[in-house]
Image (spheres, rainbow, N blue to C red):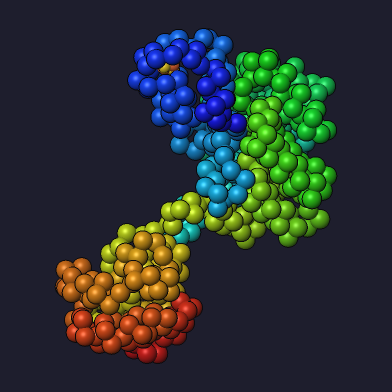
Length: 445
Ligand code: SF4
C-alpha cells in the first residue's frame, strides 16, 4: 500500500535545515514523495534500508504480468481499484479457449481453426478470443507437444496446462519465443515447475487449496527466482470462485498482501453452454485476469467479449468516433442525411440500422464529447447551431443535391430552430435506431 507522508517522514534522516532536496523541511519532502512529485534520490542522506522500504511500498499492489510476445501479447494485473467507478480497470482479461490434446488430428485442427475465427468488430473496435490454452488431457508428452505445435500457429498468447513439469519442458520448444504461461505449480510439485519457468523465462500459474496456502506458495516460488505469477483461483462452484477472486483482490489492494498481489486465472465450467457463458461473464466482471472456457462458437464467445469491452472501457473517457460525414453504402446526391452524435455506441447502432435498411445514406456526426443523443441535447452539446454548422460545411456541400436532414426523434424540439438556423427542411426521424430501416424505406423513398 502507498505510504502516507508521516510514514515516509519516519524513514527520512530529518536533518534540520539542510534543504538539499529543494524542500524547506523533511516533512515537505515527505509530502512530495507521497504525491509522487519527488524522487527519493533527491535526498542524499537516506539510508539504503529506508530506500528499500520506500521503493517496496511504492510498487504497484498487483503485479503486471505479460504472457506471450509481440503485438498479440497479453498484459494482466496492475489493477488499483475494486470498482470501476473509483477510477478505471486497466487490463482486460484474456478470454481463453481450451484445446485438449486428446482430440484426434482432424478435431484438433478444427478446434484451432475455430479459435482463430473468434474475432469480431464491435463499435468500431476489433475484439477477439485472445488466449489459447493447451491441456495435456492425454497425459502423453508426445501428444501434448503436437497439440502445442498446432495451437502455436495461432498468433495468440498461450497457456500450457499439464500435471507434469517434464511434459511442459518437452513441449516448450514447439512454441519457442511465445513465452507461455505455465500451469500450474502446486504445494507438492512447485520446485519442478518453478525450475522450468525460470529456465525458460515464462510466467507461472500457482494453485493451492486456500488463499493462506497460496500466499505461502507464491513466497516460495518468488524466492526460487520466478517473479511473474498468476493465481489459479478456480474453486468447485461459481459462488466460491467469485468470493475467492474478490477476497484475493481486496487483500492485495486494500491490505497490502504482497504474496497475493498477482493477477488470476479461472476455469469456467457449467452444466451446459448457457451456464458456462454466465460463469465466464461473471469472472470477466470480477476479477479474473484470464477466463478459460470450452466455448468455440461465435454466439457463445461474443457475449463474453462484449462484457469485457463494456467493463474495461474507461468510464472517464467515452469511446468516440471522429466527428465527420460518413457514407453508408453507395450514397449519391439524392441520398438522405441523418444526424447523430459521436458516442461510438450511438453511431455504430445508427450505422448498422442504416446499413440494414439498404438505403445508401450520409450520417452527419456531431462532436458531443462522446455523449448519447438525449444526454448531449440536455447538456447543450447537440444544438441547432452545431448541426447547422455541419449542414453548411464543405463536408456536405458537394455530396447532396437536396436540403433535407433527418434528426433523431428524441430531439424533435430542435426542429424549428434548426430549420431557421440552416435553411434546411428538418424531418423528425424515429426515436430508436431500430426504427430507421422502416423509416428510410417508407418515408424517404
Ligand atoms: S535533503 Fe533530506 S535531510 Fe535534507 S531536508 Fe531534504 S529530506 Fe531532509
